[in-house]
Length: 392
Image (cartoon, rainbow, N blue to C red):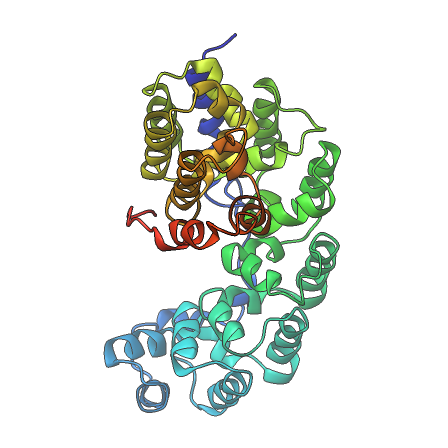
């Protein structure tokens, strides 16, 4: 069996290729270049006093930035179109800062036809639940979406992803997805989106798991297909299976971590006496654990092994214990645990790791409220004890 370090090193090399969903090829922004004539390119450094004054006096641009933008639009002789565009953006919830940012990103949007170009695309985003300040916040940085074809790219991509998201228009999911990766509706869905969704479904990532992955790591849906398949293949090689609900969590974890981060966390856990194979079991049982900070993992290991005196085998089988908040859950419940034991409130001492896994309601019912004579003291131990651990 290949060593755990080699396995994770192999896995993590793929992460460096995920810097952009279309990293292996370039999609031309021909939509933008169409509005830039040969004459304007030749005069790019010339001042355009009409537009310059509008950018400074109306949009509040500092003069150096206004000079740059007006120079890129040197052929513009009237501010009629910019006024219409700005008025429209403000009417749908853009702030002055949003408009400035969008114009800095793509100055040509000032010249876009409101009725034919801007309004239909804005309406599509509004139908997805992205409105008001959220709409301005999104398009102030993802302005390029306004340059994509409505009928050939935006609508088909939205239709595909609407079948993946569950009630995405009702709970802000679309806003979060596009803020994280607008590339999911940037190109034709036939290029990456549909093939990747089909592949993920073929390995058992379907329904709510597929929806969750889209919300958390949307770039995976438009990364190169061979890289996605390689990443899943590596997970299979270390023991994940297509019928495991942990596969999607493993994919999420490996797609957002660097080789260095994985190595440091593995070495940290091993420094507490865990073997390489035990680390592998912990990863398969709780891939999300490895997304936590090294500080949090260390605090958890120190507390459970040195304070609680928990056997390492328990943490191997239940690594999710290390994911609970030390300040809000672990420490307070441990205080109750100690009090229940010291007062001998139960015939048989409870197991702390079982107490940790209970819901808030069930924990209070089983270990606090049932002991009427000691309920107040137990509740004080639970609610009153807080340690400032500086947890991230």
